[in-house]
Structure formats: C-alpha cells, structure tokens
Length: 558
Image: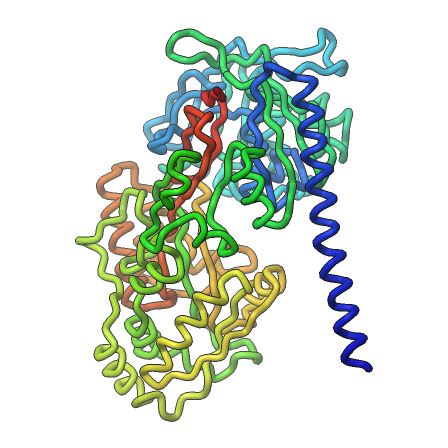
C-alpha cells in the first residue's frame, strides 16, 4: 500500500510538472502570436533563454543569459569584432600613454540614451561624466556588482577611483600597473554606460527598467514568461552602406525551462535561433560525427566555431582543510597518471558527437593567441605511461590507494562516469559525487573538494584570463585559483606577462606558464568547447565570435 501511494504521488507530481511546462509554453507562444498579430509585417527575432534572466542592469551581467540581453540594450567605450579585435563603439578613438598607465578616450557626439520622461527632452546625449558615474558605480561596494574585479588595477586618486572627464567628449582612466589586456576588459557588459538620473530614479528597480543606448530598448518584460525589445530609432551605428542599424524591428525572448520543449518549438519554426546542444536532443539533431542530420539540411542552418571555454577537472593542491587531510592527490605522479589514463578523443566522439576539441594541450583554449599544439606539451591517452607513473607514485595497479572522490554536477555525470570507467582499467577506484551546481561551487570555494569538475569561459579575449586561475595571489574565495596551486616560477612569469606590452613576448610567457601547469598537473583538461548555433533558413547575418556573443544589429529575417 505504501509503495502504491508513493507511485501515485510520483506520477501526479510528474504530471503536474509537465502540465506546468505545457501551460507556460502556451502562455509564452500565445503572447508571441498576439504580439505578431499586432506587428504584422514587422521582423521579430525570437529565441528562448532556458536559464532565465534575473536582472537587466549591466552591473550584474555575469552569465550568458544576462550578457546577451545587456548587449542589445547597452553600449560601452569599445567592442569586439568576430575575430576578437577591439574596435571603437561610443569612443571613436583613444590613446594609451607610453608607460601604459593612462587611457584617453574620445567620445562620439551622436549617442543618446533611450527615451524616458526622466530626461528633460525625453532623451539626452551621452557625455564623458556618464562613464565616470557608470564605472564608479561598478566599484561601489554598496552596489555589490560581480564585475567590480574589472577595475582591480585602477589607480587610486584622492580617495576615488581614477576616472576623469575633463570635458564632455574626453574620458580618462588611470591604472596602477601596465596591463595589455585592459582594453579587452572594457568590452564587457559591466562597462556599459548608464545615466545617473535614471539609476537614481528607479533605485533597486533599475534591474527591470533598463535605459541604455543600445540598438534595442525594452518594451515589455514579464519575468519568467517573455521579454520584448523594440528597435531603437535613434541608434547611432550604421552599416557600410550608411543604413541605420539594427535591421530587425523587435526581439522576443521566451523563458521555457525544458530544453526538449525548446527544441520542438524550434523545429516547428516558432523560434528563429537555438544555442548549444542538450543531451535530450543531440542524437536527433546530429550524427555521431557532429554533422547536421540530412532531414534537417533544408530546414535549418548550423553554425560552428571554437568557444573560449576550457572544461577541466581540478585537483586541490592544499591539504590543510580537515575534510581532505592526507589527500593522495597531492602526489604529482598520481595526477600525471590520471591525466594519461583516459582517452579524450573517444570521449569527444561518443559522448559529445565530436563537438569540441580533445583537451590534449594546456589550459589556453583553441581560438586564443598562445594556443599552439607544437609548443604546449599536454597529455594524450597512454595507459602504459599511466601504469608506470602509478607504480612510481607508490600505488602499483592502484594498490594501497583509497577510492578517489570526484565531485561533479548531473550535467557532467556521463563524462565523469566515463572517466571512472577508464581509470578503473589501471586499478584506480573512483567514486562520483553528484551535487547541485550551487552546492558544488560552495564546496570548491571553501576547499572542501579534493577533485572537482570545473570550466572556465573567457571573461575577455586574452590567455591571461585562463592563467590567472593558477596565480598564487588569486586563491579562492577571493580569486579564481580554485586548485590553490602555488609556484614561484609561475608567479614570476605571470607578473612579467601582465606588464609586457610586446604581444609576441607576452605570448611566449603564456606558453611557458601553460607548460608549467601541464607538468605540475593541478588540472586535467577534458576538452576545449565549441559553439553550436542553429537558425531557421529565413535568418541571415547572424554572427558571433569565440566569446559566444550575440550580435543582432546586422541580422535580417526574410
């Protein structure tokens, strides 16, 4: 009787879950259909955001969902091209002092904020003091922006951050130390310009009342259901023929959580764009070799390119926490043995349909200067070498070694079980510990996980961003050094590279650091990710870059 009651309860809950998904989907697409009927003849670009959006304040654009939305609503001083070059945006030009400490930006005089009654004339022009306010806001502890770290190296001046506006069209930043990737940092949505009077007018509600300068402005946001953005008629950028951007009339974003439902809506043509590949539909959409299945060739387009995302497993190099005392993974030869013991090529082929590049080199991913397969010595599949290193570590065939616990999340369970099976072939017992994402992040931050799954998506397009994970002064929770790796030789190279203005010499330092990491093996690189985008045939001009940005300014919908 008890078992039957549990089964009925389970079935009811499962039914309720799918009913909620169905009703949410219906509400979303009925809303979209109603919107379409009101805007007949208008071009509306539709995509779904399963992760949801919690804020449209660029100061909190910390994940891909919020970055994409912010990119449509706001602009910064500079922006990235599809090949990751830094080019003008609101700043039409700039100069950098010889010592690399002063950046002088010259602003356009035709950039206006979205219309709002707070402005005396419904809108107003962006001036240099707006950037002073916006950047100081990011560093304000009371705002608690997750992007405050962007200005960690900004010099102090009379107790205030060194942002200056000598006139309306000139904006100056002074930094404490030369840092060549600094311009790349300024392309992040955190560095978007906002208007002081708007932020002060809305207060905490600015998160849902975004007023920026971007190609689109917000018309409607029903949280968890739909976000509608309309074309900004005063947007300042034009194409090469002098035609005002953007081409689209509107962008409609839905928030369906279930990814199988999203896939079905895309196949039916109710969505124009779909990003990424979920296990629930990967085999339906792609062949084992990562090609689009023939039945979809005439219906949709597939766009692929390298993604600046390195997936890895980290080994904690600090045995002081009581929870992981006497951690055998402190043994370098054991870590090296584990690195040699599993076949990354097979993993990519069978578990990811050949989407991505096997992580046989360093932490720097394909697509960044510094990635060079001829100069970085990583790990390939070599079970004989793994067995030899295991013997040298004092654990022949795994004897004398307790089970090793690998902490992960459910999204990566298949990869971790594969690694578990591969390591079992050389005598290593692995226990896979599955955690909710938030719980795993907390474990890693508090150094409670000796072996954990991690990934690093570039914040800005420079290899320094990846190597910062191993700088000893970046120990978490204050910094990204989750493994607590410490090496004076690495630190010296890292500090030299940060100050180096010669690109070729800086890349040489990066490669030396990456080789040190591979030799010490505080991580095992799994793969370098790949961007997968799917669009309907009616969509033209959608471009991205290896940062996986979403640029809709030049998109057309036939």
